Length: 147
Length: 411
Image (cartoon, rainbow over all chains, first blue to last red; front, side):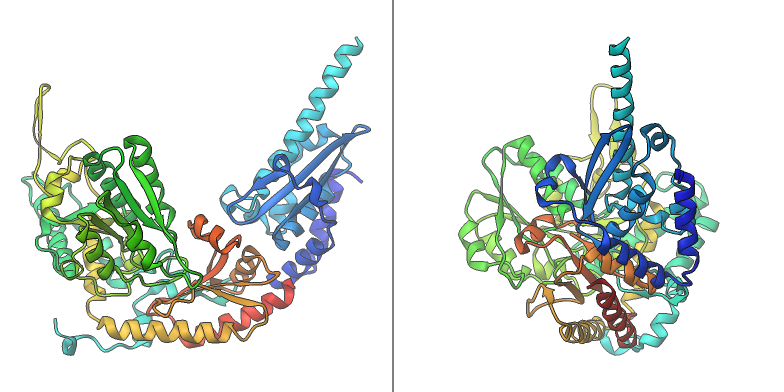
């Protein structure tokens, strides 16, 4: 499934909810189901301090794909993290860098990604893209070395 | 005006004065419980803003034309009104600022110039960041020492500790009248007397008190009192620094520019008199005029009636909240204003705030710009409902049902 397909799938998932509270019930469920980041990985270099909630992000690059695990102290933030991970996980870094996460707007949760929301999510997306960018440049260095 | 001449206190009628209260948010009637952050504005103030910009707009002071003189006299009339509302000795003691934070920064920079290395400044552990950081900056600049008066778990300043910290080295005590996070009303009159006994000056942060309590600066005998217009039903971007005239006279200007000078040459500039010495540049004219209007609006009512209504709301909300399991009210002082800060075990304040918002209820969540206070209670933040005189018990019933629903979803 492409990144675009994954976004469309989420938009379709959300279409069945009629009101905000139902939407949030689903987000909370996603948040509760998201595997927690191990305590040992909640280190200073992985933390994104928001004014309202905190986020921890761990990014690895294996076999040409990015892998993300993340956690938050707030469950709604965690639910939205689950959605972001569902879209960006297992994608190659080039796709992630150029991705436009329009699904957030379409399901009406864009307020959570606004930098003024200060829940750490806007910075998390930025960090995910930065990790992808770093992976890309490490590939370039490796290619040069081979030449 | 005597209490007998005051307008009858009717919440139903008061609500009609506030157009912002008549709207729906996410399909629900707005319940506005974020008054500690900012208050809504009555039509009386909105009309005054509109009148100024649509008819009377002109730059003030030194304009010979009719509109400039009109704007000037309205602006200065407002200053006089505010002076008499606070019972200041003269309107020269009323400096218009951008707000509470600006007022504190003015004092920290200007009065701060009169301080020397080793001089001590006392604040309390419940201060808003704006009554912490300007003093830390001053201490870095001048080598002064910032000391913090501890509080107890109820959220009250420990007076014995205050007595212990006061000394001839204390040059300034800067404390909040009412805690924005806890709602505690501090015994400032006693604290001011004690500070004066060691020769220290006192600044009162009145951001959370001007809208709830009658402020009489001469009775309090505070040296400085600061507040913001927007929390007292007036515009944003305007506030007041009250200072005793003799003290303000001694203080150097804070910012340079137009209006604050008498004569400028490249060799030497002489400064204007009070209050203009501290008002460089074109001020927030509409704000200044309409802050007076906001206090005029409030002054129609007997503040005791407002206080009683707000206390009933806070008690009612607190009692209902305490029926929930794992509920803790943060700030348990006997002397409290209409702020209820709470946390529920296992529920993050941000999640609660988000779900309440979707049910049309505006509360504030987080650390409320009092991070050291959150550290003291070892919590990441609270959910804070802060009431104003236009709120009702029926709104609290809806709020309690929404809190219950939110807890059910989040736990």
